[in-house]
Length: 557
Image (cartoon, rainbow, N blue to C red; front, side, top):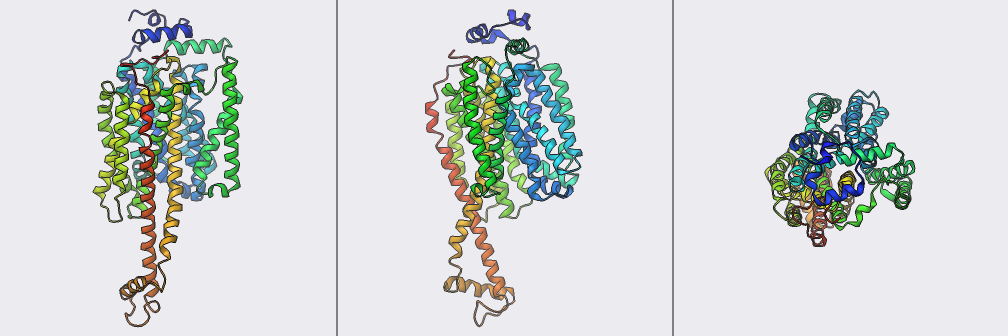
């Protein structure tokens, strides 16, 4: 290309000049020297590894607890520590690239993720494992925003949907196969190998990134300004950010376990989160007023496209992770499936999304993204309504079909949501957009998981309390059922059916069936709530402004 920006990639470029250039001829501003698809495959490799690691350790918790001499509850900190660190660093990733550059920050995150993964595998005690998982979460949290911003800057707007399709494959498929892969590794080798597995992938990613990925001129210009003292590190902003999202993740992960506000610790963390969040908003707005670079770019929420995209990405994370937890738990607790078989219920849906993502990527350049999202949420809602027909006699094939049906809707959401979030955004703000959209998906996933866990416990108890009222000697139906079962368990049909040999076993059997029925009703209630939640997103699509054809990232500026 003949652009001076390409010839002199290190030359200063004012933000105003960047915006004008990007707004008028985005295709001529900057393009990477390497084929964009090679760049996309390079960053997607690390994406898959990082997202996979957020779910692969779930099924290994009992083995980790046993191997390190800890309780099951203590071992859950292995998951919590990662999620908390991940949530804190996600919105701060764009801020850090201002000081050291996107490529260097990305490579540091890969190195940190790889080293901490090796240390997790070598950890001799639970406290050290939790500490190494925090480091791993910091490294992993910095990867996703950088990867998405790299794709947004590498591809022209008309091809961005196809690039996000490749990225979306990693995001949606990894959680689906994570539990199955983690269970297989743990059963056949050792739980430590779920962490060692990351090391060679990190080395390959680091090598490819150093050779292929490059920083665009506006990122280099930001780094130069920060080195001259134009941008100062905001330590208070970092502290408030950590307190806000760290407290939120702790509350979501431990809330149900500690009975929410019945626990003084949970109440303390909720208060801390609210105070830190309000203070952070005030502080970040103040930084904007005095001309400093804020850690969280709140100006993005002035754009309707981005604000609605943020909400929709939250709902996507809520639905995806919520049902990913719901279905394996249902088949294991009520249908008696093994962990590996439960994972195989989800895996075909991952293959379905792999097949659909390229199709959606192609359609995204031809069809209004609002129509694609409308179809996606409609299919997701209909699939959840169909799932409401499940019962305790459901077959494996039917379960797989229902999950595939649901996946067909999810595939139409990830790419269009990302596309509308970037409309009207300066190229220099790509990292801010990707950091906040990834944060929305992760927080949505945590909320979805907490919602499923809480509602399942409470709804099961409520249904059980309602149903157990009928298990009394005054109920002829109950007495008749005990009498029929009594003979099966070694009792005699004559005499009082409620006493004698086999009577207690018969009553216990009936109660066990009642407990399963109560659990089944609880699962159906949760599915109903999720379907209503997703259906409520459809009217929101009408508030998204019509995107201009082949909109550039700075359309509207």
